[in-house]
Image 1 (tube, rainbow, N blue to C red):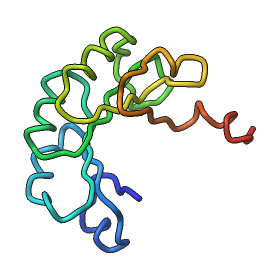
Image 2 (tube, helix red, strand yellow):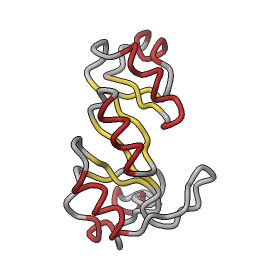
Image 3 (cartoon, rainbow, N blue to C red):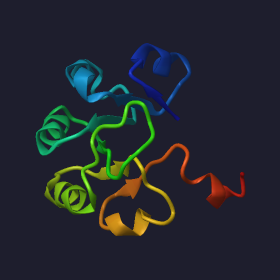
Length: 125
């Protein structure tokens, strides 16, 4: 289990780690080594390099495709995302607008993340 941006809560609930928003990446350094896993959001090559330099175990890069999420950034598109993933020195997970019909377009990354577009895969409506 991961907790978003709250390391004290992560400790309290014995989470595996913390996921950091890109804007709060500098805070993550003081928690290095206290969790099994720390990840960060990234929206550019520069942000991926910062996450790597901060000791993150992986990054979630978004938005890959157009997304209805209120926090979604402008979509990178599959070509830009794949380039970022290839150049990264840590595992990259795609996030944003990924669904069963387009997930295969970003092969070569560590994995994909999603919130709502995979419900039909699990049998839920």
